[in-house]
Amino acid sequence: MSREAWLDFRLYVITAQSNHPGKPVVDVIEQTLIGGAQIVQLRNKTGTRAEVLEQAKALRLLTRKYNVPFIINDYPDIVIETDADGVHLGQEDMPVAEARRLLGPDRIIGISTHNLDQALAAERDGADYIGVGPVFPTDTKPGRAAVTTSYVAEAARHVSIPFVAIGGITLDNVDLVLAAGAKRICAVSAIVGSDDPASVCRSFLRRIEAAGGKAEIANKKSLTVNGRQELTSARTVEELVQQLGQQNKKLIIELNGVIVQRAQWTATELQDGASIEMVHFVGGG
Image (cartoon, rainbow, N blue to C red; front, side, top):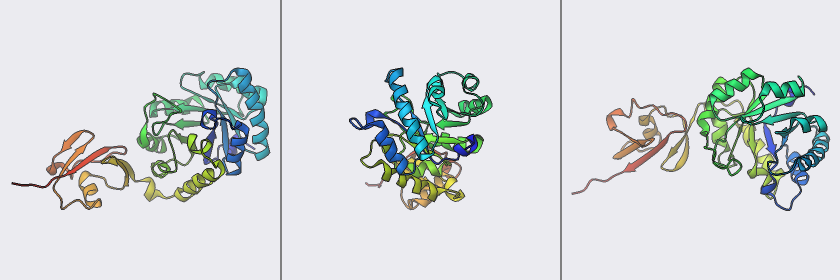
């Protein structure tokens, strides 16, 4: 199968031994493949090279059995040794051009990105796909600030190569990510840390399929309103107030920490990822 065909995936799964202590990685990943996972990455940041190699050999056999591409994080030499399909790099790892020199023209090279500048640089450098994230806070990337769905929307508008949204994505928030324009989803702990990885994979795939091609959903914004996530087509504060049925109430509205005066509601545009506090007050004497 060609590299382009391998990249026609929707659900990307990454290993995470810490999410399933006592369960072999191969057994957990096989459950994800039974559930429909379409690409697998081996990510082991704590093991020795020998341990990573052992896992890679086992996962290479498993992914061949299910005819899905197999990616290894950080180790292009192990990619070659196990005949894996590609490598995934971080921003601090070797340049894409160096990885391409080592791996040749036919293997997949992906790279994590955290902003649009990095995404466009990866595209120029010849990456086959990029990771966009972490979309939400995640224990997999402790200390890394969430990029929110705003960056997902930017990638959808400006990046030509495939991108996969990753980081803190669960069945509770995946619709927000898809609405921002993502077509490919990677979930780690939500899948491999679950009691039934196969079932969770099927649920993710149903959500992704349901969102496919719905432009009216992709044009909506993800906002945080009084601490809760809202998906809305509202363009301004005034439209949001009306959509939420609050137009007849006395409100104080704070947008990203700044109070918006009533006279400015119509002119104040909303951006994806904005945080809004609406306080309803009752006058008294």
